[in-house]
Image (tube, rainbow, N blue to C red; front, side, top):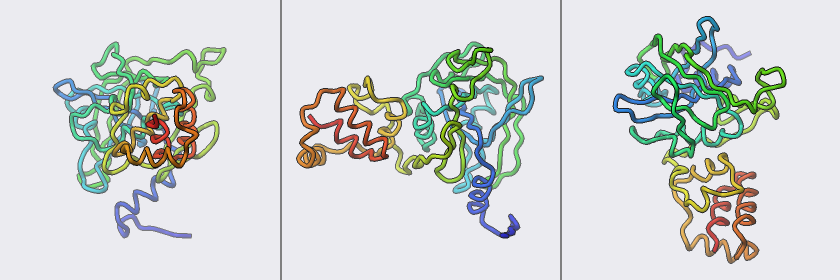
Length: 286
């Protein structure tokens, strides 16, 4: 058996072991606002529920292992003392992943991920309309576990109001685990789905994806493509240029002149095998 003293290995290596061993972990899709009212949205898998009276949740936007920076979520929670925790199901997992990219301060991750801002009833941060369950919370305390890279910052929240999409309820009014179809975080690029087990999502590219907000409206308003599909399309750093599309069309003349629905259906098939570049080219063929 491999025995490890945490003090004798690097923080990134220790971080990898911890995340690989303590899994799957639920995901807090946390919505906050800054002092000027600008929205922010980011996922965190250091998260769970810790009591029902009062209803208490804790999540941790840890300090970056790479450069010891803090997340906007932490800064906002410290200032406003409010947060909305949205749960993540399979239908929005790709958009959630896209929102985790390190976009500059002030960028609206709702727009980048193609998610809908829904006004909350009690707190100021917006809810994610597509999330099946949303918790409006006040921040009651923040516990700082250290000031070095990888240190946790435990944001303790009291749930003031919760919203549940009735489509995920069973006949007794409880949450049906199959209908809600939650996903959880594992180590590396792996996630877990209650229905099917583990699956992999490539981490958002370091150069930042264009975002769903930069996808042409004719594609974004597709009758075929899902939010997950759009999240994958938004995680490219540039759209294929005309020459690349023309070359692809010469190699695949069967995609030329297709009606929109058929074109989007073929693109979706490429997305299902994680061939995002080919999906983009199919969508752009005239």
